[in-house]
Length: 120
Figure 1 (cartoon, rainbow, N blue to C red):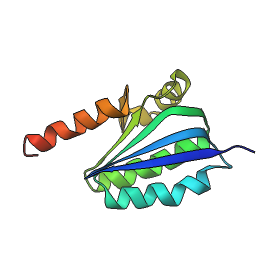
Figure 2: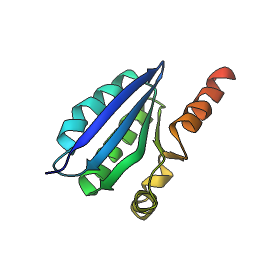
Figure 3: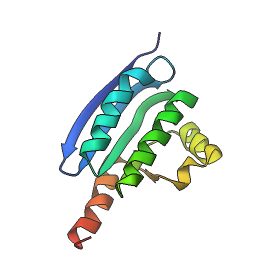
Figure 4: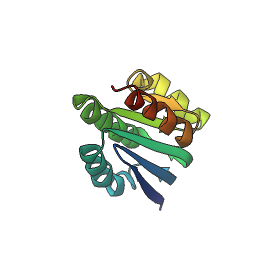
């Protein structure tokens, strides 16, 4: 049995979800509703994957769903601190063209705050 722990931080229009554990067939259901609620209430979402040990195709499908919903509202999904294996999965799937990859949640927050300061 795999586990997934999720911590959430609200930064105004940006939500940060810090994932620890594995995102797979067993854990996607526990994250799905929470992530989609966050997508409905925030312009952008940062998924901090520094503590994620595994991501399978069901987890990837959840990311695709979140990207689509955010793009419908001119929002952004940022994947922060992904492992090399996750980066490769994003590249192979083509999902890397539809989301932003950042070295850390902090760097992602700074990047997302930039356009807001410019009046965008």
